[in-house]
Structures are given as C-alpha cells and as structure tokens.
Length: 96
Image (cartoon, rainbow, N blue to C red):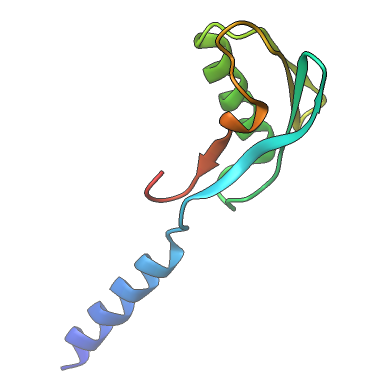
C-alpha cells in the first residue's frame, strides 16, 4: 500500500510541474510599418532571452524582416504577406 501511495504522489507531482501552454512573446505596439513584440518569462524552464531568440529565428526563417532589440524584444517590418502584428506570437509549455 505504501508503494502505491508513493507512485500516486510522484505522478501527481510530475503532472503539476508541467506548465500549460502560455504566450511568452506577444505584440506590444504597431507603428506604421513596424510591429514590436515583447517576450516575458511565462514558463519557468524557458528563459526570456531563449524565447526571444526562438521567436526571432522562426520569424526570420519564415522570410520576415525582423531583428532583436535588447534581450526581450523583437521588431519586424510589415512586409507583404506579414499580416497583422497580433497574428504572430510565441508560446511555451505543454500542448503548444
């Protein structure tokens, strides 16, 4: 009985430590032909700079003209096919 109780507690702890999908990089402002994004530490195991770097890489790999600003911001030029600023975001956690 003690062994079964231990495994139940262990399983519950493992499930509790998994974070739900959260937006970590989102649009903050739109100024004419520019979109600005801010990344936050939405998931404990995903540092802000890593989120920024991954978001930036995904945008650049998609062919968008974006660059890093400081350690937690991204700026993009609204080029043909970019869409709206809020169409782009980056998430972390389980089920993203």
